[in-house]
Length: 568
Ligand SMILES: [Zn+2]
Image (cartoon, rainbow, N blue to C red; front, side, top):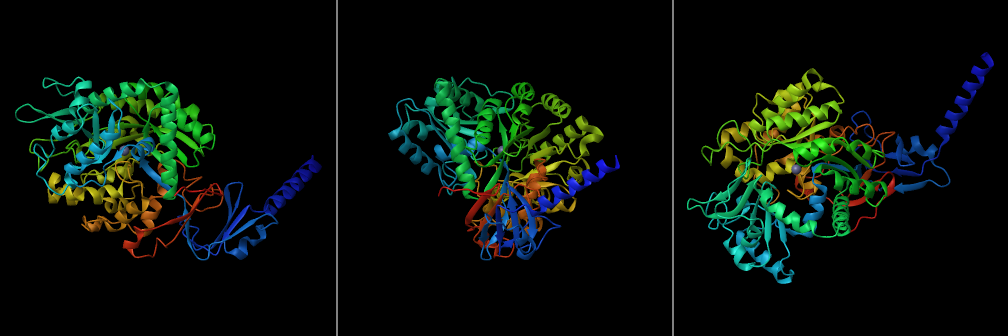
């Protein structure tokens, strides 16, 4: 017996000695390294083996891991940080936006009509023309905004009489359609608005062509029916091409992991396979999204897609409480300052949300509910509190509120108290700033809007992202917004007292986002035993001038210790 124990310890000793002597595949040295790891800072080198960081420190400390086949990478002092994690985006939506008309930079309705006109000339008869990104509050002249701040469809219908046109609002919470599209969708002057949505009509009962929230389904259904006529193989090929476009585009910006805010099970299966087969290099975390009925059904099947969670993980469900502020959909405690009587729209009934939340809780899935307005946020906090009770704060819950944009000061401490993650998008603050005060009035804008500093001071877990394709996926614009609260093109500053520090902004795009996806043990920092995802930048994001953050160039991207060829 004693002998057996002795042999056992001898074997353990030999095994650990071998382990220590294990040589690295890659040693990165002479780098200016931001680790995002509070207890492991000031390193200048790290070693990687089999896709993981195995040692960090000075070159002296880790040079013992250099073997005959170890690749040595001299960074010549360049800035190296963990791979960026997009905390809330729409992966296939991003891919689609790279294929369809992108209206994010348009400055007037005329310009949009002109862009559509160009597409009409090359489109085949009857082909749908899709676009996304218009925002009436970002247009220069207001002459076109004839009713409720919206344009009429007439110009669009004139230049495209035979091709149906659907153009989504930047927020994704409204769309404008031309006559042909409305005809295919069976919309007439008599059509009534559905629950949780609005077919916008003027005082003479004329349809503008604008559809808000749930009313958009009337049009998207017609569009989907057309898409569904395509052979299944073509539909799948379209998804794959969107996924590859999205991945290539995100990698250019140093995004090595992407958190998708809502995809149905069928598309999720395609994405999972692309990740497992290594066709997509980017790592995905995907929330299950869709109608209440689908989410409740499909929730049973997502766990089986978690065979390799490092590449693809799905442990969360997405639902909507309200709409967006720009389209008057955000649920407010008090009426809109520029639309008296309007209080926003509840998109999913409390009953349905409770059903989803209860089922998610029983399966230990994360619940991620979109809430923008102060009322919307309060309702979601109440929902989480009611469904989870005292278990809300358990470390394995980590339920999230997506956007958490306008929060009544009395609700702010509840995020920490309930262990709820505020999944915010810093760049929304600076791009929406021009209309936030109009919608809310100065006082409410100041006290409730994008209150990152207040939430952080209350020990809230934050996540950060762009909500792409609502915004560009560029993380540097988002980091710039987080630390300056200034719009990058107009310079307009929005209540700078709520700024984040540089360190906080970088953590919000790395380790905090990893935490929000229950992945902080394998991702989010340059630390031993984590996946070796890191990027090399042309400037020091901690110390450069804040304006210089915007022009950051990603020089190299590594995922699992392997250099990724980034398409320019
Ligand atoms: Zn979103």
